[in-house]
Image (cartoon, rainbow, N blue to C red):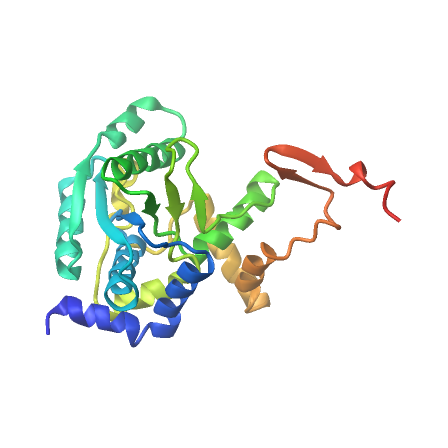
Length: 278
């Protein structure tokens, strides 16, 4: 049996409950894929986006074939080794990737300021534009469960606000385009387990500012998000359900107890109707 078939089989057997069922549950609960969608599955070359691509392939093959998928890889200026690794993994996993180039790494390097923030914005804009030019109405990104809860904690600790990462959102700059996150419910630990089970190796960080991150280290760096990863691991020692509670808290915000909130960019405080309450 060809190796990619074994990898595909592992998704719906060994990792059925930990990955496949959570992937399909998110697609259904959040209505991420609808009839007639043409989705640009955006692949960075890391474990998350590669797994997402396989899940989308399996959904078309075994679940529903009422949508189209294009598997896009943007080359923002990868070095030759990283580019080759992405192409090799795509062949190994039988993902029919379509690669398009850009000069984002070079542009970010000459711009100064915060390179990660600028790079992320430019890359997303380029993906939207390319997907739209190919007749797509959605782009799919590989953000997973841990990205969601880490975003909540980052907002609280570093920005003093409660915010989340939604499973889908409409683009402000590309009319008719939408972003979806099919791995929204899949924990990173299970993605890592799937990767290791199949003996796969993906790039982690192909940025020219951090060339030493080319081999996957699973969050061993020193950035703010990695600090939050470690914090959540410590919280889970106090309460094993800490990660799920952080996630569930975004469903259970009690507006009757908060001091203030924002809706549509407008700020509201509890005093607005305090005297009217009994």
